[in-house]
Length: 186
View 1 (cartoon, rainbow, N blue to C red):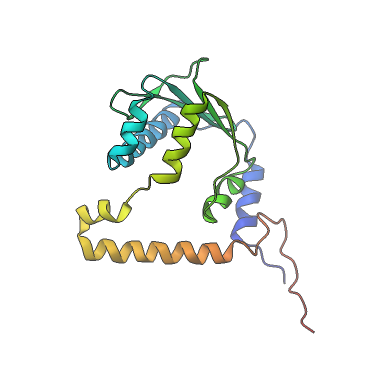
View 2: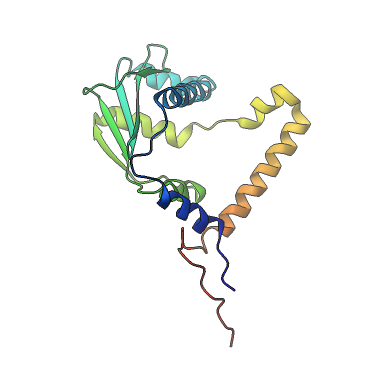
């Protein structure tokens, strides 16, 4: 009996979506605004990161994956401001992944997804430094809401789930159309 994995199920759903299917503008705008708020929250926990970005104030960074994109302008405080899409950017980061799986898989392995970089070299170096050195301390934020002990327990559960997913994913072909028969052992 052939069984299908969650990955093949997700791939079949993704393949059935029309290529022109896009979320409504208000949903995209809200998602972009929330993403910028989260990024600024993480940046505010790292004064050195804000200092590095403040040196790049006024510069515009565009991030794109397939048809989705957003632009941010670096504020004098070293934070990000959502910017309307324009033709002039100082740095353009284009994620090369064709599918969501190709975008997420490297992250699960602790690597970076493939990115095409165009624009200012120093700004690109500062953004790369941020990606390499700034981490969200989710446990500390959660502890402010539920307390230290529950936050630690919830984050431990999350880490165990992430480790299980990392062990599960490498042996799997991403989004295989059909499950292969079990190999016979000699």
